[in-house]
Image 1 (tube, rainbow, N blue to C red):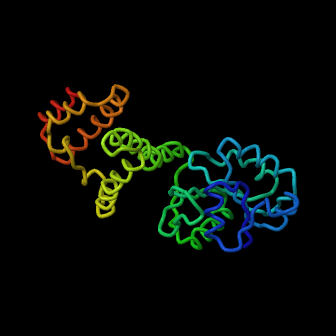
Image 2 (image 1 turned 90 degrees about the vertical axis):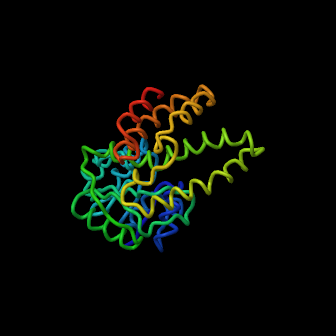
Image 3 (image 1 turned 30 degrees about the vertical axis):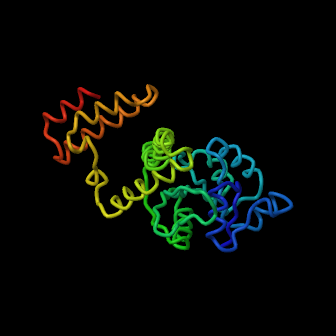
Length: 257
C-alpha cells in the first residue's frame, strides 16, 4: 500500500510521520505522477476545500484508487466526483488534537465511513497506526464533531479565559499558563480513571456553595460572566444528577446563575 497526502498541515504531517513510506504531492513533479504512484490518498485540506480538490483530482485517472478526507463534520458528498470517476471513497477522522508530526495515534479512536473497499483500507491504516475504529451515522456527523469540539477546542477556550484571569497575579501570560497546567493535568488524570466524566466533578457547585458562586459572579469581568453562567447551569444539572447536591441546592444555584 502506497499512501499519499494532499495538504501538509498539522494532520498531514502527523499522518506522514506515523505511516512509514507515506509521500506528499509536493514531492512529485505533477499531480498526475503523484496519483499514479499512490493507491491510497488522504485529502488533509480544510473542510471547505475538500470538494474543490476532489473535483480537480477527478479529471485524472483515478480508477480503483482510494481517497479519504479526514473531516469530522463532512459526509462523503464532497468526494462524490471521485466516486463517479471510478475511485473508492471514505472518511477517516482521528479523535485527536495535532500539534506536530509526533502526535500520538496509538489507542485513539477514528471515525470511519465509506464504501466497502474504503472501509477495509481504513481499517488496515488504523491497524498500522494502532488506532480503534468506530462508526458515526452520516446524519449525526455534525453532532459528533460538536462533541469533539467540546473535548478539545472549547477546553482551549476555557483555559485561555483562565490564563487571562490568572496572569493578574503571576506577572505574565506564560507564567499563568504554567501555573494552571498542573490543575488541568490533575483533572485529566481523574478523568482517565473514570468511566463517566461527570463523576469527577469537584468545586463550589458540586458542594452547593452558593456564596462562592455569587462571589465569582461579582468578581468576574463582564465579558466572562455569560460563559461562566452557561457552564455553571450545566454543572448544576450534573451535580444534581450525581446527587452531590439536593434539588433545593440546585434550585438556589440556578437562581444565582
